[in-house]
Image (cartoon, rainbow, N blue to C red; front, side):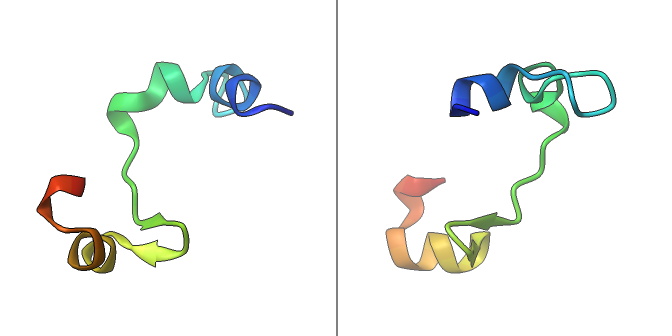
Length: 46
């Protein structure tokens, strides 16, 4: 499955990630918690 297919697949409670985007909470990016991500990549990553 491609990233686009995953983003648009209605497999999250009958909705896609695209449809649920306002409900998404990121807790990790590339295995780093979001606080560590910001520390490493700076405030411009926010």
